[in-house]
Image (cartoon, rainbow over all chains, first blue to last red; front, side, top):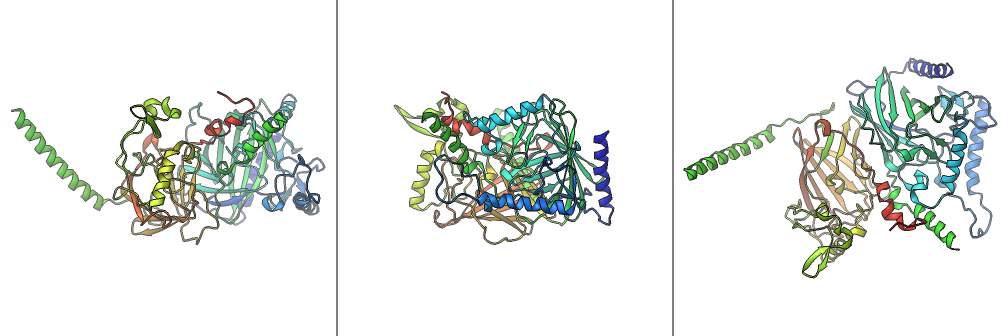
Length: 322
Length: 284
């Protein structure tokens, strides 16, 4: 009931935003035109911060969250003077290299404290049995250096960090840009990170079950002016999605439904629902605004220059020897 | 009698081939290609070559493996490739370079030969690196062209490569990259794509043919039927070649149930090759 209510709310919002004088642009063949380059970069995180109770922030709270985000990024460069001791953590980046967004997520003008809108507490509804499994898996992934396949996907350059390519497509520390390209039979989404392309086939049959691509098998259809995409058949290794900005455990059997509605010249309303009864006590829903941004998207060649993975593995081998 | 039958057959087939030739010339002239809403020739679709240009742009004889070594009585495959047998053998190919050979400068030719000797460790394809232009076109994998108002996008199966072609000259690329920077213009019904800003790490093929970071590639796409594109690419690179040179080949449209593309995401397939020796317990 709660889920249905939230979904209805989102749909109504999208619809009401559409009727405010905005006329959906269309492709030559009549489908709504979602083409262009969009970003989901935001200070707002997937799950609600512990100290925040409500989904909707007032303007003072929104400003405070944005200030906190800016300070957290500036603090990256706040290293102690002089040389670090051997073995000290130097961190991954200088602030110059990250681009996580500076504003809170706004949906229809409303400032949001989390991407998750359902459950109401803004947390991923892992079951009691799943939650410890998630912690155990995440701990192991971050602390196991025996084999390349055991490292996070972003380090392996198979897909981008966390769930940037998704689905659901979630904001990460940088390169939060997506290009939408349409044909009468497909919607392609170029994910900047790792130049991954989501191939959403419209009104198509699922791939044979033995085929489990990265980012799953996505099949879409238009419901009015909303693109509805259902994704199944995930690659079994894309179950644990760890990024600095979000951590999500899904499974190869998770089902993701996404709804994309262009609500203005510069915004797409993006709602996703994740269902996996083996992991979650209920389907959970997130909502984002994709904002139009300047292109072009430049090449993000990850694997070709991947010094991280061999250095991480050889570092572990060195440590074992010493 | 048999000789008469032979003569008749020959005569008929000659006549048939003559009329077929005439027919294709007439068809090529009369062919009216599909067009996008803005009147440009539409190259949309999933395309692929039916040749072995990726083995070697130049003509080459058949051989037992891409990389050979001296044997007691003639060349044999290098040890890494012996187990592949006929699956690893390389068929003879006519080449796709107009005029036959790539016009290398002398020292560049020596480098090409050195590359060929080290193919298995040096070819970016072996490590699933991005293919660059023009190699992306004639890899033995399909690619999709998406063309509509505002977009000309190439989506390659191999290595998940992509190419976003600008519709006007964007000026010099801000930085060199594997796939470079491409922009499109039209000469009548021929699509012309100019690519610069590629660094020097991609190769043309498995034979070690290569270029520098100063290369300009000008590709010409002309639709010759509902199912074929006449594809040409001219390479200019004064550091490596004595003059510009051109490759030419047909691209074929995949149709029916073949007209869809699965990505060949090979990064995970080369982890054992690249990182296997760094496992806690390396495999045999």
